[in-house]
Image (cartoon, rainbow, N blue to C red; front, side):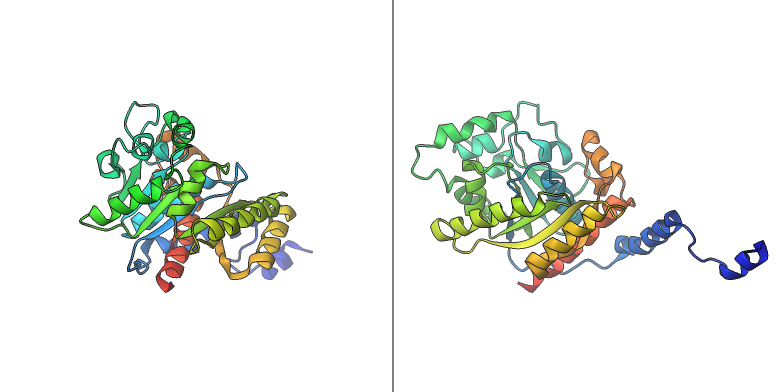
Length: 303
């Protein structure tokens, strides 16, 4: 084809490369930054963010969904129930510092109001912090009669005593099914499940669904999987597309339309003690979590 023919075949302003298409798509999606806020729920929604398979973006999803909801005007509490304390760090606090947190709350030594912290970067985003001490709490309460309901009781007391109620409480669960996760499932109304778009995704989800089925029979009949979020999606690979299709076929409308891409900026943000929402608010990762939170909020308001 001659140069003149090629020029005629490509209209002015047309997208003619994958990079240009991606940039055009991101520019369109950035409208979420100026979108009117979604409706707020009329009662506190308590969500356990859980997947028994590790490395799926569980903590990343917890803190970024929480930050996105707070950016839209909600009052959001993150409960860091993972002894690694990564959610605490991402919200702006060093989990290595010797401060009171979930360990003292579950032992009954402190209330949530005593240990609650507000994000230095985002008004309306609060955290009940964690640190490595929390790893020992399961052994310390294992023989107590109320061992599965300690979080439920502490959270109920905190929510009812607050002058301003929370719109959302997100509980960052450990990746294993231990007493801490059981406490989260007893306290929560629903479960948000992040799923990494890789080979064993459905296997981990099937295990979690069985676990929640047991929980509803024994301890919390109202618990349900309300939303599934696809994370670490790579549009360049057939694997991500195949996993996404399989999850959507298996779980239908429970799967959020939005998926979270694998990006370097999302991975960088916690090292700066920030969520992606404040670290790089116009990036692809921030836009994706804002879209996911918006969709999640619309679904929450409908319940």
